Image (cartoon, rainbow, N blue to C red; front, side, top):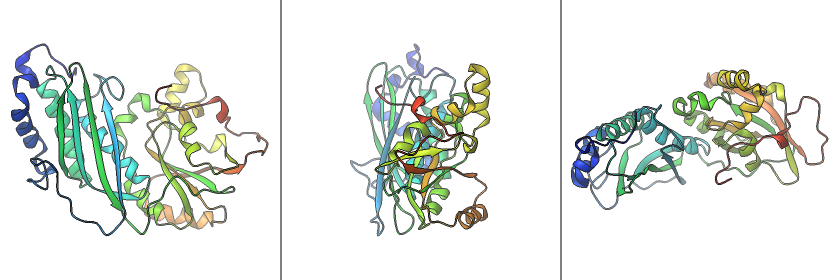
Length: 318
C-alpha cells in the first residue's frame, strides 16, 4: 500500500494538525495515558527511577527501512521493536516512548491509522506507553523517529566494551535473510538481554542490526580480532534461499545482510561454557550459539574460519 494519495479527502491534509492529533489519540487508545503522563502537554512526566536509565532513538524512513510491500501496521511495529532491540542489547526494559513524525500533507489518513494501530498493539505487548511526540510538515517525506526510554532490569547495564582476548563469542537466534521479510517480523530479545546482563561471565553485549560482519567489531578488544568458525554460524532459512538465488555462500548472507536484531555477546574465556549453555536452555527456547572467540590480532587464519575481511554489513553514508 502506497502511503501517499492524490485524493485530498483521503489525506492528512484534509484533517489539519489538531484533528490529526485527536485521531492519533484514538488510534493509540490505552497505549497512551492522559496528560501530563501521555499525549497532550509540552512534556510527559515520567516517574523517577532508582536504577540506571537508558535512552535510544531510531527512525523508519520510507524507501530506506520499508516500502509499499510492508503493511502500515508492520511499519509501526518495526519502529518500536528496533528500538526495543537496543534496550535488549544492554539488559534494560522499556518505560516510555515519544514519537516524532515528518510527513507530507498527501499522506493517506488510512495508512497513518494502520501505522499507529500497529504501534499501539506492539506497545501494549511490551508494556511501553507512548507518552508524547511531535508532527512536522515535510512535503514528499515520510519519516517516523521514536525515542525510547528504559531502565536497567538488574544491577547493571552491559555495554559494548569489556571483552578480552580469549573471550567466547555467542549469538542468539539465526542470522541473515532480512531482505525476505525478517526485518518486519523479528522479535526483540528483551528477556534474553535481561538474562545475559545478569550473568557475571557476560562481559560485553550488543544487538546485530547492521550485520554481524560490521557490528562485531564494536565488541573487539584492543590487540584482538574475532575468529569465527564458518560451520558454527547459525544460518537462517532466508539466508539459504538468498544464497541459492545469487550463488553466494549462505554464511556470507548470514553475517552481512543486517537487520537481524539478534544479540551478540562476549563471554569470559574462563567461563564454564557447559554450565552457561545449560542455564540458558532452561530459560529460553531461543537458540544460543558459540560462533568463535576473540584471539590476538597476529593469530594466523585457521582452516574453516570466516574471512571477515571480504565481508561487510550495512554502513550508513558509505
